[in-house]
Length: 308
Image (cartoon, rainbow, N blue to C red; front, side, top):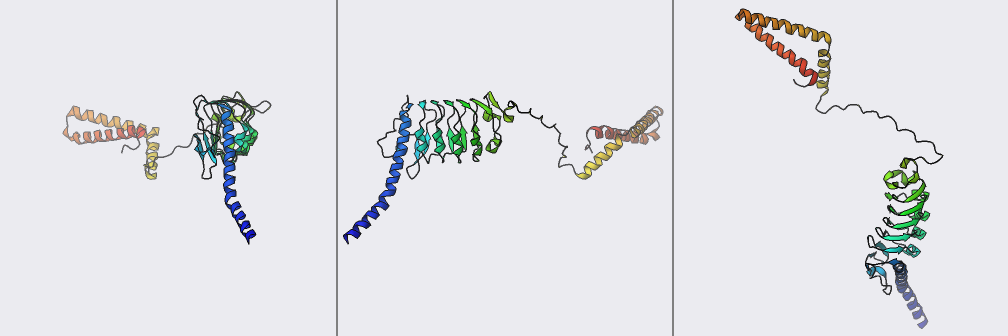
């Protein structure tokens, strides 16, 4: 009986204590990883003063964010005047989603162990002094949406593995010393020359510089202006009438007839005035009206088809 009770107690102890022990070990491992980073960095402003390795987990440290399981999901150390180098232990932060180390003076190479951060959404290492190549292992970050490595001194080619990150939305590799051809397949088909600017030894269509041994770029197709679009206020009937009147008024024959008509009635007006016959008053008025009307038609329909 006592043996059964002891077995039940041991089983209960395993079920209850084991998950807590796993969480504590995981938290301690993440704390050790971040403490390794702290010891490898120079911190003139004591930004990392709260990173105390004797605490149970790093979730109470400044600039560190954890989830409900006390696992680190954010490290925010941008613009903190830090210098030194990164450590490979950062690859132990399995649930890390945001690694923000921009605008510091961190040097050395980017650890290939960052490719183990498979939950990473944003990697911001821009405005530092990193050297060496971009790790090919970053292509394993299948959830990555933002990758900004600009304004460093990175060298070598752009890893083709990065084109396999289908979730990648923001990419900035500008202002480095990268070389070789810029990939244009996969997720890289979305990015513009701004993402690769000021890398003098990069080549490819997106840079405007052909790679050695490749054929020259084909010229862009000629520009074809789009057809004119009529305004909504123009009805089909109005348009047809306008074209009809313009076609008539623009004929040389009709204009000649109009000029003769105008000159003829102008002469009648002059004769009527000289003779002073009142019988010509009505034709005079009629002539003036017709003269003004046809003149308006000729002038306005050439420039303003809708004056009437």
